[in-house]
Amino acid sequence: MILPFFLRARFARRFPRRLREEAKVTHREGPSQQGAAYAAGRVLPLVLLLAFVGAASAQEIDREAEYRQSAAVLARYPDVPLPLDTPALAPGRSEFTSQAEMEAYLAALKARVPGLVLGSLGRSGQGRDIPYLLFTKEDLSDPAAVVALGRPILWFIGLQHGNEPAGGEAMLALASSLADGKLTPYLDRVSVVVVPRANPDGAAAFTRSTGNGADLNRDHILLTLPESAALHAKLVELPPDVVIDAHEFSVANRWLQKFGALEASDAMFLYATHPMVHPALTALADGVFRPALEAAWQPHGLTSFWYHTTSYRPDDKLVSMGGNAPGIARNAFGLMGAVSFLIETRGVGVGMQAFQRRVATHVLAAEAVIATAAADPRRLRDTVREARRASAAERADLIVAHRLAVVPVDLPMIDPESARDRPTEVQFQDSRAITATAKRARPAGYILLGDAAAADRLALDTVAVCALAAPAAIDAEAFMLKGAVKRINRESINPDQSVEVELTSKSLALPAGTRFVPMNQPAAAIAAAALEPDSRGSFIGTGIVGLPADANEAPIYRADAAAARSLRLAPPPGVPTSACEPM
Ligand SMILES: [Zn+2]
Image (cartoon, rainbow, N blue to C red; front, side, top):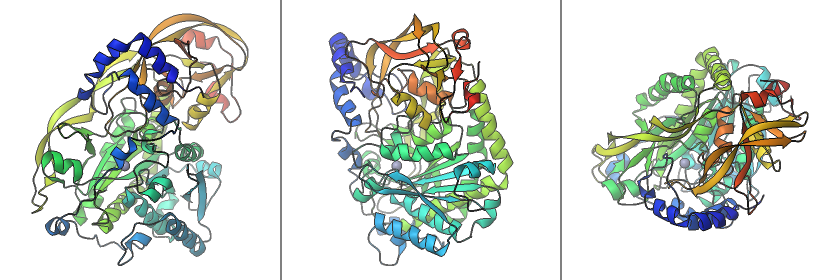
C-alpha cells in the first residue's frame, strides 16, 4: 500500500488557505454530518493511525474515569433474577473475565456438550484467539451446509470495545444456554453464531480500542484490522439475517460534566441508520424486533432509550444518536442486507457496579431476538431476501452527503445523589431524520485499477468483484481529486476523511483481467460507500487505495449502463457466475 501522505503534501500545497478556513467550521459538525473540511496539517497523523503507528488520541477515548455511584443510585439497579454462571459473575468476584478464563469457559462447554461447534475466527493483532460458536439443530460445522438449511442466521457479537465487558459476558451466558439446550426449540427455525470477544486485545487492556489503538467498530468497511478481517471472513461464509452488536455506554463522565446528571436507562439501542439501508429492514427492526426487546426488558423493570452519545468537549451540549458512518458495524451489516442492532448497557466507567444487571439485560435481549426470529423465520428471510434483491435492482441516485435534524428531546437522566428522575432537555441530533444534501447518479459499476487490495477488502464486505474477460475500450467517468475532507468525529479514533472530487469523462483502454464492481448486486451500497472518494471513510479518502505522488485522478472509474453492457465479465474464483452476468 502506498501511504497516502501524498494527499497531505499535495492538498497542503494546493489548498492550504481554504482548508484552514473551512477547518474553523468543523466544530459545528456532528458525528453523522457530512461535509466539514479538515485542516490539511492534521491529515498526516490520522493517516498514520491507519498505518498502525501510534495512537495518541486513543487515550482520550479510553479515558473513562472510574465513577462510584451512590448507594441510592445503585439501589435503583438491583440484580435481575436470572441464573448466570459466567466467570465474572462468581460470588465475591472483583475482576472481569480474562481471556484465559473465557477460553477455559468455552472449553468446559465443549467438554460438556461434545457436539458443540467451537471454532476460531482468527487471531487479534497481539495474537489472542477470537473464538466463535455456531449453533444449529444438526450441530453442523460446515458453513455451506448451514446456509443450505435456509434458516435465518443470527449473529451475536460482544466486546468490540474492550472496556464494555457486559456484552462479552452475556455472550458466554448465551452460548451456555444454547449449548445446554435451554434454547433448543428455537434451533428448529434459526441458526446462531456467537462471537464472545471480537476485540480480545482491547479486553485484555480494558481499552475501547484494539491493541494498535484503532476503533474496531469503525472498521467494518475498510477492514484494516486483523480483528475486523477475521470477523468478516466468517460473515461472508455465514451471511447474517440479524446481527446484534453488544456494547456498553458511559454512565457519568461526560453526562455529569455537561448536565449534572447520570444516564438513567438500563439499555440503549439503535438499528442501522445509514441512508442507503433498505427501508424494509428498518421497518422490521423498528416494528418487530424493537418491541420484542422492550417486552423482554419491561417485566424486569429494565428501561431503554435510543442510543446516543456526546462529545468530550464540555461546552458542546449537543447529544447525537449513533451516527451514520458506513464503517460502524450496525450500519455496515444493515448495508449488507441484515436487520442490525446496536444494544448497549449502562456500564462504561463504573467498574463492576450493577454488573449482573448489565449482563442480564444483554442476555434477555439476545434471547428475545432469537425468539422473535424463530417465531416467524419466513417473514425475516423474505424481508432480507427482498431487501437484497431491491438493493441490487435500485437505480436511484446515490446519496453522497446528508444532514440530520436536531430536535429537543428529554433524556432520561437521574440525580447522581438521590437517584431521583431528572429528565433533561437536550438538543438531539436524530440519525433517522435524514435530508440528502448531495446526490449523484448511480453508476452501473466501478472499474478498479491498481493492485488487488481494494478488491480483496470488498470481497470481505460481501461485494462481488468481477474481472474483464476481454480487453475493452470504454468511455467512463473519472474522479478528479480536489481536496481532503475530514469530519470531526466524536467517537472514532480511526481516520474517516474523504476527498472532494469533480467528475470528468475519460476514455479508457482496459486490459483483460481489469476488475469491475457491478452495482446490480445486493451490497451495491457498500461498494458505493467504499469507492465514491467523497463518501465518508472511503478507500481513497483513507488511503486504502494509495495514490502516486503526482496523481490528481483516482484509480477508480464509474461506468454507466451503456459502457457496462459493452464489457464481457468473468467471475474470479469464489465469485458466483450470476454476479458477473451482463447487465
Ligand atoms: Zn462500544
